[in-house]
Length: 239
Length: 262
Image (cartoon, rainbow over all chains, first blue to last red; front, side):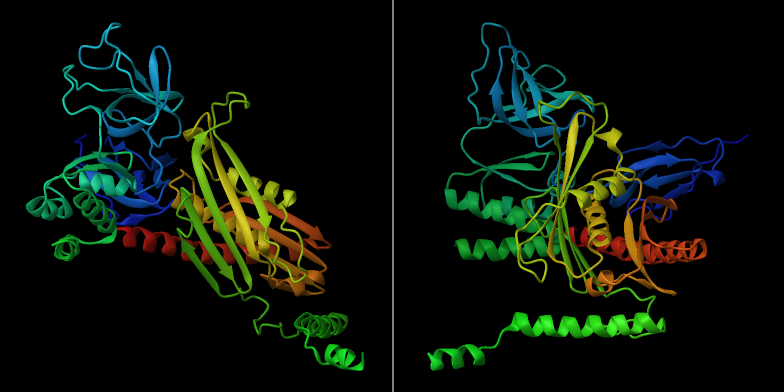
């Protein structure tokens, strides 16, 4: 029998809430579909289990994209964590998840027993999630897949603030988010965005840090045009 | 002395006036019940009408998710925290824990008193929600649901359950379906939906149903007082119908909140 592509759900790119039937499997035969976060199979239907927008990645991946204050760790996510405790073999890092994450002392470029990094409690770290399992504490690493430090490691100076996971995803989206594009044309600043809803900003002057932070926080509920006009009005006040 | 007495006599006491009105209403209600006839409800609703509802997500910024509900005079705020690590004292569990707490403010009821934790309501809220929450998705962790009744105007628990369900969805906790709840009271041959506190004081019996409309599942059914079989069936059907309509309001609220965030 010829395999046909699943008909895209009528709810794709629309808001769904828990209990909504997203797909009816009785109409689909000999097809494979992949379910991501926020969806589950219930007999012959696929139902939403969390509120958000239903997304489809062609040909057959469905998931619910939602914005939350809490973060559920996922492998290969880049996160901003705060060191809350140090143990002989690893650091305990708060990544806004259900459990504290482990950062092994050897998970740094050229990490050996002789050059173990010294992080005080409260240190801000940009890291990558390498293990994420619901029954285990997540594991972080400050190296990329090739073993290089890349952009990972301790973040010094600057200012860190919490946002929703939806906003952090928007800031990391491609093409560049309008608010960052508009700010980048007028101001010089460094920014690190964690998918766990934390943002770190550093700039030569404190006033620039405040402007960038406020612009990012306000941008969550604005459209692209709204973001640009908001940045313009903030920069006018600064000059 | 006489001047002081005169001043005391002339002082207006709102509590006394309110108490007098309440007594009059209760007397009228008792008279109607004795006649076992159709009678007008104090707020002008028919027997099968719910109070006007207002619901909103996100009033508590510090919480993972929160919701506010206002049904007539009953006002409730629910905050959800977590999933967060269970206390070390607790034993390992491969499913998550749901911790529910219902409390009243000191000014929630007409008789001003201590703000208290309602253990019975806390247990019933837990029972109503645990069937809907996917506890296996957050092992070793706890989700805390804190409900605070700001003003008690009758049918408190059903409103707390519906509001808690909205708060859980707002927090992004995985749930099978939204849980909505409605209660009905029995007065002689009459069944009235969504009773006020005055009506609850004189009811012959009550039924509260917590229901998941999309799955057509009842998560909790509480029955008190004297009921006949036929009347129970009618009351439960009435509750389920009202729950389905209330669920539509909850869905709209969630969709409004999501579109506002974008």
